Image (tube, rainbow, N blue to C red; front, side, top):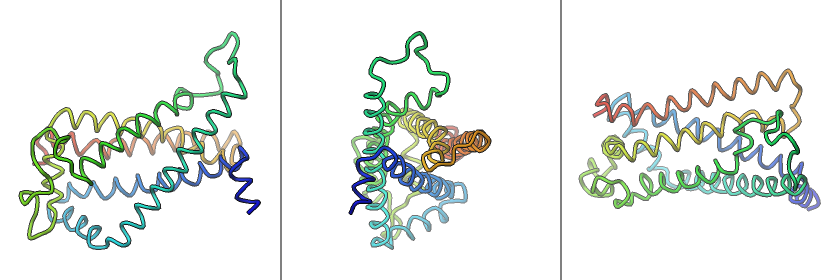
Length: 232
């Protein structure tokens, strides 16, 4: 019980929680990207992958609950640490409003978190809950038009879902914000657990940037391919 209490109240404990939850969420982002990229392998492949996920609802909902828990913990610790840092330096930096030791990404993590939250809500309503009023094409993804033999035609959903330029643009901006967040957070989580030597910091910082760029290209390639007619 004392261990949980220390994690809850101490800054170090919050950093550990934020790092572990962030790593779990990053693992999902990578896996989700690999799953989505199967759309380039054809309708049968992506639909078979989607059917596999939907046919294991018990596992799917356990994963969703776990990810939601990790997201809540990540947000909670981020907000608490942000307020603690603000309280520790209420006046700010005198004569140097932009600290040299921090990056633009690190100074705007809270703002990016809010933007990502809005994007996440929209993305879930768009493809998971399938609210037809927000896809801007006037089609109901839960209807018979988007089913094959009683199974969801995810390939057709993705093509139609990204066919509207505004939807694709918002998706690209949202993914950009996510990858911007990863570029800082992916290496910061190692600092949070004590791996903070200057040598490893440089390596991890470069690795996080490369990972963020790869993820951005992977995610954005789908709406861009739909808009340009490569996927149809």
